[in-house]
Length: 446
Ligand code: AMP
Ligand code: ZN
Image (cartoon, rainbow, N blue to C red; front, side):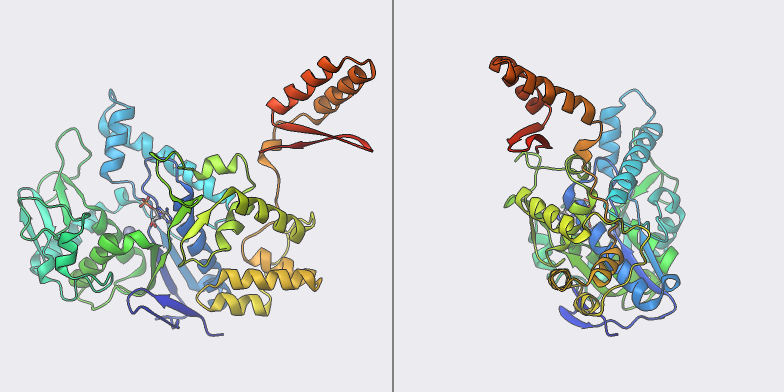
């Protein structure tokens, strides 16, 4: 089977040919662990999970190595730790924030049906590899030390800007490039920076300090996947500066002309038509959504849009998705089923992971009544048929029924005020009553 993938580097869709079909190697940039992951962060996690499953199907489970890191060294983490634990020693405070956030991340994405990667490296356990790579870059004339910092000399990098398609001038003009007096060139990115006692730091030839973000992934990818591997992924915002710099550093240090053969980027997620941001009040975490929706609904909803397109995350979309999945599953538990992509589903996925086309096929299979093909494909896509309503947890059905009976008794006694009080009390708990010809039923409201 021919698997086609779109490559940001060549801006083309092309057949995917692994370097070694016995070990297909993929790296995806993982979360920076300082706060709950938001639903936008869930997108690359789900997208590359589907790719992981697809690669395992095509090449064999044991022939795919997926690395997704945990970014546990970052100034946003340091700031959060100092703010939350002002009286604690900084390393302990940072460890508190990162371990708690990592656990939360694992719990959240497990609920989205995401498989653990083969390796999940952390920055803190790869500092020597980062230091070593920086030393090589300096020795090869691609990096320089200035005022306790080590910077990548972007002017020395052949093809710098190639991945993101930007010229150096454009990058300098871009708001995301930090201008600093010690830089030879404003585009030069930080490989190492000094840490005072109030910050986490590690010994290095340039004094106690900490790595910059981009070198972290270069070093972790090299350690676990080698100098050149197959696929590197992340959200589209990572193309520049993060991936551009990873690519530059890795090629210059390793003496290669490529880092990953294929670079893949997912489009951005917005909420109800607007960019998600804390100031707009539409910032929503995976964890919050999981309190209202089954994880599988969130997962499927993500797959309704092609991964390279922007996605508009809406409650209406979630409601549609919940209905679709309930129809597909028909109450069946898929967890013990063997995942098996039906041929036309696989064909759609093989075309640059066209999940909307795969979903069209799922509907066709459903209409045709081909349950084995439908459920096998859903299982292979990571669904288990679990639509347990999280809002129903802790709901005491017997107590609701008792209140419904009391309300009926009140009505029979013409005590309408009491009947209304009971209805309103249940409504306040998110339980709506429906009076019908067969009596009163209840449902959970959102
Ligand atoms: P961060 O923790 O900020 O490094 O982000 C982790 C991952 O989430 C990266 O791959 C980002 O590109 C991705 N990401 C962040 N925000 C969004 C968004 N709104 N939509 C899609 N992906 C996002
Ligand atoms: Zn990265």
